[in-house]
Image 1 (cartoon, each protein chain N blue to C red):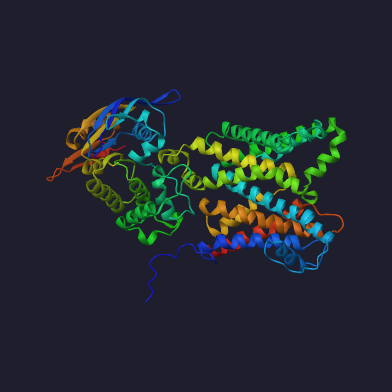
Image 2: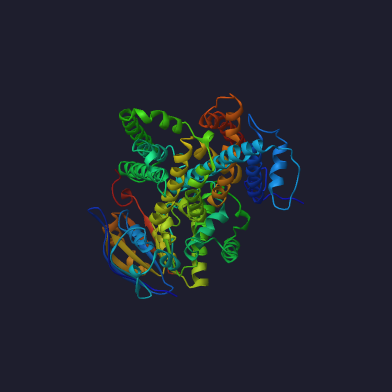
Amino acid sequence: MYIEQAPAPAKGVIPARWWMPVAVVTACAAILLGVMVGPAGPEWWRVPLVLLDRLPLVSIDSGVTPREWIIIWEIRMPRVVLAALVGSTLALSGASYQGVFRNPLVDPYLLGVAAGAGLGATVVFTLNRAGTSSWIIDPLPLSAFLGGLAAVVLTYFVGTAFGGRRSSATLVLAGVAVTALATAVQTFVLQRNTDVIRQVYSWILGRLSTASWGDVRLVIPYVVLSTVTLLIHRRLLDVMRVGEDEATALGTSVDRVRIIVVIAATLGTSAVVAVSGLIGFVGIIVPHAVRLLAGASYRTIIPLSIFAGAAFLVLADIPGRILQNPSETPIGVVTAFFGAPFFLLLLRTRQANR
Amino acid sequence: MTSLAFDRVSVRYGDRHALDGFTDTVKPGEWLCLIGPNGAGKSSLLRSVAGVVKHAGEIRVDGTSLRFRSAKRRAQLIAYVPQTPVLPDDMSVREYVVLGRNPFIAHFGQETKHDWDIVDDVLERLDLVEFGHRHLATLSGGERQRVVIARAIAQEAPILLLDEPTSALDIGHQQQALELVDKLRREHGLTVVSAMHDLTLAGLYSDRLCLLHQGYRVATGTAVEVLRPETLAEFYGVSARVHHEPDGTVVVIPYRAGDVGERH
């Protein structure tokens, strides 16, 4: 006999413990698909074979020429890996900002981080980019990080100084203002240095198309550091959900958590913005999609966002490569074009289920 | 069992003194109830113990000043139920109650099986097992109050602070919640400090009352000693009769001016 004592717990289509494997498999499948598809190169079905062939102890005759192998390994692979790193970092940072500011509306773009990082990167371009090539540490991500950090700190203080307690609306408005300011300064700097305008604008529109293993190597230390830091703070982000006072009473050093999480998320965002340009929408849409599907706990959202973000951006990069061949559709256009309707659909179905 | 001592504790918000020179000692296992009109400093006193607001003076737990305790250690000693707890709509009851284990988990750590066992045990004792996977938004007022108390109990702290634990509840749920606190207090030897508006309930459940007015402690003692018509008139500005039941319960009954004189 079945007696319903209480309304059924919030259940999704898939049991909670399955979400992580689903996300990992999706991300791997997206990466494989990303390597298989492209305007030039071998037939798509040869790509998995040649990848298997490269594994130790495996030998398959894939029929891929050395030239085609170079297309796969030196052109497609770094681009796909970079897209995965950028997507996962933007999604993870977005989720972390939402948690630490207790505001579902914020993302790296709304807080001004991306614009600040863009300004930081622009400054490096204008101050003799060629001269930095011999430096041991590339100043581009660092400068982007300082710009992004300055922007988020400014947003936070402006947003809280006038809003009293951390109000959602004032924080977002402050982010909009800081973004406008950073963009204005960037435009001013560019006007005075017209020789680098082309370089900077092609960078702003997204540089995934020219990605090389060098770009991957450049961001990977920052991405790993940021990801690990945010991942180990996922439980504390759940504690922060009950607000500053109660989190304090529960023994959490709220300010310390906030500072560490903001710095880590900003570091990751700035580093990927420095190599990929400004790609909007990922940081807000992916965490929300994860939240709607798999629940609101940051213990779930944070790890899932990493894989969901990677899968989303790798997939979003594919149409851009083949739609307008030989020219390319900027990836930011694709993320918005596919992301917005998907997000609305999610919101609708979710509300219908309530 | 743990004692809680206050030595000239003051709380200020800007220029305003919310609490001024409060001195008292709550004995181990005692239930002290703070009463007083709105703005008397009850919440400020509780918030200063919980570490949510800064205070001057000393607050000592078993003789050691809280100044020398980390936030984590303080939370291991003191569980705090705020007046209006933040209950995230889409958080499940188990996820919420396990937050009480936060003081025992390292900064970078995650909950262990032991923590979840404690949560399940608390849910069982508070008759909340069937609610475990419900979202907080779906709970009624009485259920929410029990869930918040469950979180405080999961904290396993020897001192329990309750700020208006029953103000949002109907009379039946008020009694249930306070009976629950009293039962837990006896089982675990908790020291309880609560702020309450209902004077009759305050007298009924606590060992001692402490009357605050404009940040000052103006009276303390048993219900019979503190709840007197002239005291209530002076500090609450209320016209009330105080009725002593045969079992010792002190009942405060407000009356309208018309009952004794002309109606306005």
